[in-house]
Length: 193
Image 1 (cartoon, one colour):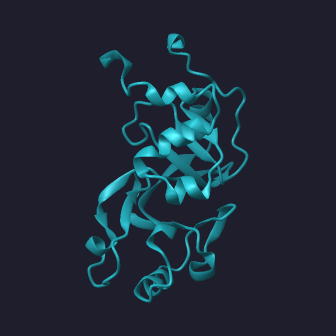
Image 2 (cartoon, helix red, strand yellow):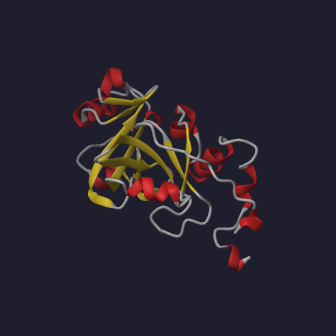
Image 3 (cartoon, one colour):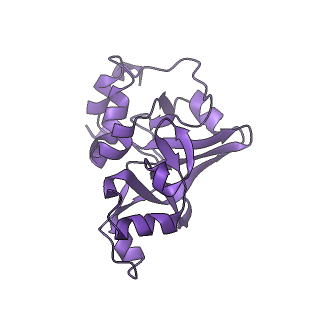
């Protein structure tokens, strides 16, 4: 597909957690087609991250009707353990959690979130709730990187919490620079074009 002028990120290696994986435009895995994944844990033993641009039809009230809180959308964090809920947020003073990159936190106290929502001490845009996660075993992600399945970008608070879900992948691609910008206009399947 060289005729599509798809740039390669030469010798890109994941340094640590706190980076974004941005799916190359034609990644065929339905779990990751046009996905943007925030990496929260990365070591020799494996990698854990969350797809940040796949919203479900559910909100928190659908899953936990016993708490009357504002509608918080639920996202699909990935295909692994889809019956577990995870939290990304930017309010550690209320929820705690582990900082994965400047200003972005993973985990924290769900009870504190419920209290903050009930007492109107947090904005629903400060939190992303995700079902499941994305995981790679030892060496698996490195192999995918060598195959060119992913680009690596730097995350930002505005991309994660303020960008419309449908625009996250495109904005992440644009953040890679001018050589990549044309990729946002490529069809998902060039054979159907």
